[in-house]
Image (cartoon, rainbow, N blue to C red; front, side, top):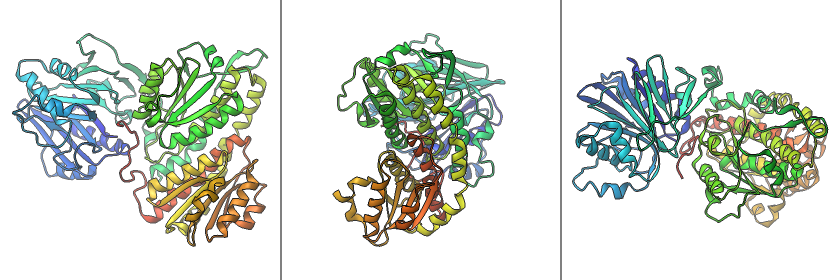
Length: 617
């Protein structure tokens, strides 16, 4: 949610900012603006409601330049997405300009300390500009003024601030919202995501909570709220600009769907330690572990906390962990986790799942678990993210940058990672040993090639999508490993086509959902080979008898019954393990949703009202 790009020390700062904002459009936003330090006595602000194109059109009509500036794309929380509510915000004199991601929870209380102030927006952000202006007008230097104001703020924020009377300087700070800084070739940068800076540098620092960074062309200094010098978290980004480009694909989502064979292979690669285990075989390992690995052998319960698509990968993770490790697992919606007093102790493992590692609700759930002394394992894609830094241990997927709002390769790499986590916990508890793990891993390494086989059906799936693109209601059904994929399939269709879609356990059909079936409905049935296959065939017969069209997803070698009862069929290669079949089954549902949305002419990569990284509750 929201994007920030700041630059000081480049004559083409405006172009750098606008290009960076374009790379952050996937985060979701509904207005945009820039502030440029044109001269020692003037900050120039231009902002517009709507898409970035509205801002660039406005800028083309104005002469605006400078070597210092900040850009912002806003996802509305306080106030409608209008020109006046767009960022940047200034104090009444125009001396201080502020952009902000997050929410200032006590902004009304702070406004009350400014009884004579006139506010020109409905936002929580504008009060920060007024407060900083009061401090600098009282004689404080800009960094000191910002530190003073930060001590009065409640809530989450990434703030970037300019002062008309301090040319060349940008002051930034963060609390519970991502913000990175970088310096290269006499230029300092800040951004809410590394994608905005990848053209300029791949060596960045992530600010920690309540750190304040001062950016000038000469370099970056970082302090805490007391002005004591500290350091951010420095890291190197291992992907390049090409990975964030469409590379000839019509949409980022389609590109990312087709990147899944490589992403899954990268996630599975090099997971065995060369050191031998008790039986003389290699052992699985985590990417980072800041606690004694022996603690994982003493775990007697697991909570998995996640949101959205990650929640459905967690449901598969539950099955894998219970199967291989023999530990009871609960899957929790992260936004609800800490509000219900979950019972946690040092023998309860909390696995926090977030593609970005910055999802606000998931971070809050992980923090609650840490406060209760429960170990936290982060399953994330982004190296150096907040969740990865705060957790006791980390398992990284290797999906690379995912730009489309609707997640595809991040989801399937999470599924692959959960298979490995299930094996790892089974290994730590002595329930599964190196030779068996090696055998399972060898079979899992066939997955990328099998995904390629599914992707070869793209044209046929596109034809099915065109056939069903006008369907007014679609129901997805599945059992066991098929249920989470049914739920993910329904979510994908809703996200990018805006069609009404729901998912249900197939066994619950007769307990209410079957009443929704009527002529013209579509039922997508997840029926891969496995111990629930015969039951799924019966459920397909039930919905077809009530007038629904049936699109079945089945496995080579067990499709005869599906052909007899489904109107259309997509076949999958036989997975090397039943728990791996969700990875294959997810692919055709991604393609189906994509092609339905294309047929309907919807905005594929930036669906309405949605954001890639949700950094507010």
